[in-house]
Image 1: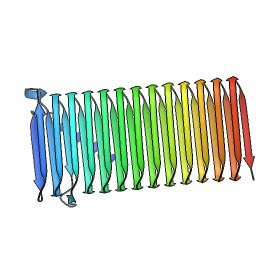
Image 2: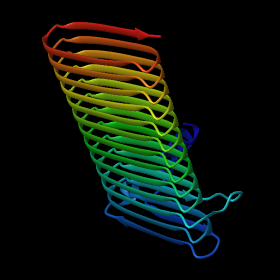
Image 3: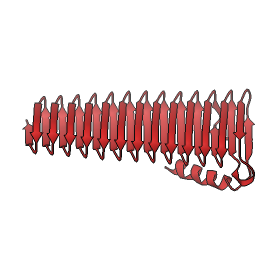
Image 4: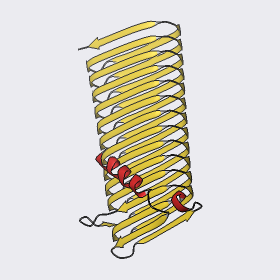
Length: 322
């Protein structure tokens, strides 16, 4: 967050300058290009590229008015090598900042529309970032620290917001948001964790947190005003959540190892909460209709639960312990 704030301040201070391409390189074999099209006087675009190290490559393309881009690859005190960044902005008043510390990172950013914002920070070795934002007033912020992590965000529409935060090795995040005013946060800490978020509609919210190794989470929401939370602490946990309708709510908490949850909600105003504490639990919840409510609590080891609700206003509570 500190990096995000500092970068934002620096970029908006830079917009007081006339359109410019500022390019600084220290090292050998670095390549940097900037193409700034359209605009005059205070409406021109601004592109800044700083590269410290060797064999880094940075490219920016901006078409429109008052776009700002900044690429930092390496620092004077910490040289970085063989990093690649490509930023494309088409439209007006877009801002993008990419900072890469370490070696062999890759970042690709495409923003089409107006008032879109992107910030990406990568530190370590061989991390990969891909961001596509098409529409207006979309925001994406990502932070990857470690080795061989991958983060992808695709946002199509207006006023969508995505945060991706990873620390460790070989973690993967994939976020797709299509519509308006969708919001997602994904945090992963460990190794070989995998998280997918897909939201189609408006004003949906998804939050997923994974701490440990080899956890998997898949959140899919279609409709409006849906809410889904997944928290996994441990190893080899699986969380699969599907919501098709409006105003559905789903919360899944897994504290332990090798737990499995599968929740499917079809209709409107359905609610589910599943809490697993311990190891080797399985919980399945199926809701078809409206205003159904399900609660599942599993503590200990090796419990299995299956809940099916078809119709309207059904209520179920399952408690398993040993």
